[in-house]
Length: 123
Image 1: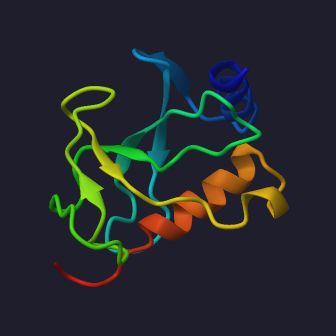
Image 2 (image 1 turned 135 degrees about the vertical axis):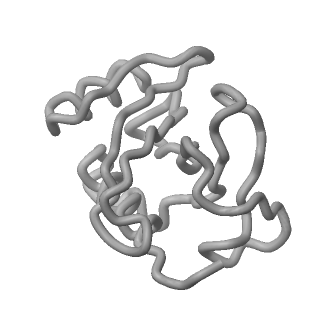
């Protein structure tokens, strides 16, 4: 269910979504706020049990922040170079808090993503 449901919901939200290897779904996203405002990125998600379980965190292409696997303080901690779904993505370990009370859909996930990408401070 997960991959197909994510594709369906992203397309219903008028986002250009596509399948990637290894059960990932990708989509183009234009960052609306913060220091990366206006930059178009590709976001990849893997959530085989969606909508019951949200994506573990977004995979971002191109890299926006330095790799920092130590700590989990947003925005600079918990950023990995896991080479999934391809080498060009970095993984942001950002679990979705309160998923069960969110509507459990891609509209809610996109709102969460928007807050993750609203980064104003300099590196």
